[in-house]
Amino acid sequence: MNRVLARLLILTAFLLLGRSSRADEASIAAGVGTVEPTNVNSTLWITGSVRFPLGRFFAIEPEIGYWSRSAEIFAVQASLSDLNFGATALIVVPIDPIRIFFGAGACAHRIEGRLGVAGLGSASDSTTKGGYQVLGGIELKVGRSLSLFGAARYDGVKLDNGANLDQTKFYGGLRLRL
Image 1 (cartoon, rainbow, N blue to C red):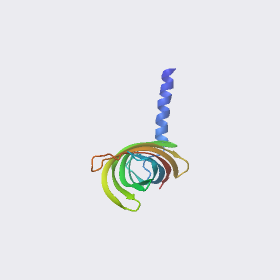
Image 2: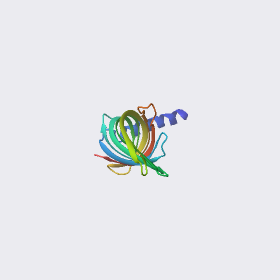
Image 3: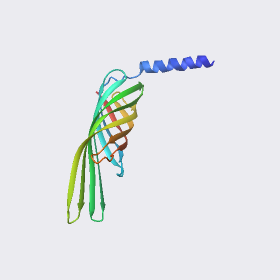
Image 4: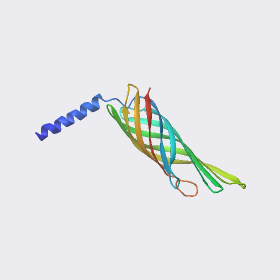
């Protein structure tokens, strides 16, 4: 009996994979979520991407994202922002109506900081740093061309002074298949 059940489960898995939607559908996505950079309070993060298929289970996904955080204590004002560009190589496992995806890639972060004291002026600096990103998530088809997605991501970024501005991101959004 156990062998029959095991064979039935394996056959069902192969049938699901065989009839599933494919990763070879180009799509665009927009997402919003939270980012928690190292030594900075969490804040809102927005992102957009385009997914290009490279076969049944593989895709490349260029993306752009942005976050900004400001704080004021007495007469001191500080702000930090990050505009990031990246490309992620993905493995996409389509099991209709869901898709599980995970991958890694390279990214560039345009980081800007500003510090000001009321009545004394302000100073600012900016730098562009390369880094890496790893992510994983799930999509749920909710229409012929539309999916909802949720993802978790980690960006590794090292600054000139040796400090890290690593970022943990949790986000969700909509993906439109083209």
